[in-house]
Image: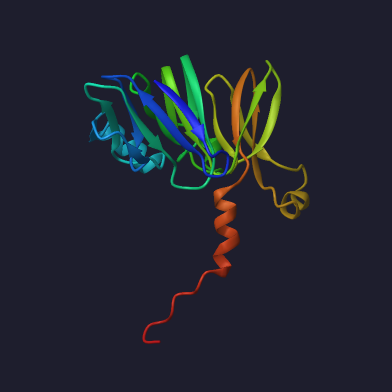
Length: 228
């Protein structure tokens, strides 16, 4: 599988080339275009319970799509549902934990599951993460550009809860307040943050979708009352 990321970082598009007989698994609805001879199979990966877990707990689709190049090489174009970046990561016997909505696609050799991230995540963007493990190509998506940080052993980095995309499963994480005092926590606009401690990689997104929704919500038309 070969891939190129086009038009990044604002409106990224993944151009994936498949050899004859090769497959790629994607989030439902991620396909923009493809060679006519690619075969699509949509099913609940891992069975009903695993699929329900990903859909209800981690915010992923109930069904995942697998595209296979039948008889000849082919290509597929993939994009996330929101404006932003796409990044390809080559996993070699590794495990990545991914924030809900940021898993776009990957090699069929990779295992995609749902992981309970711990009680400390309940105050953040979600208590469940997508767990991807094995060897193969992983495509991540974001709202905004993707920024990679490599943490040395024992090195820590603090991230706003709405800006994390993915991180190496070996990285330790804990939820904390952005400031020591209550007043500073309230007035800074930074409530709960997460501290990640290496070694390992973390990937951040330059924009926060929830913050954007909160910004435009007051500008949206209010629903009219009954009978008006």
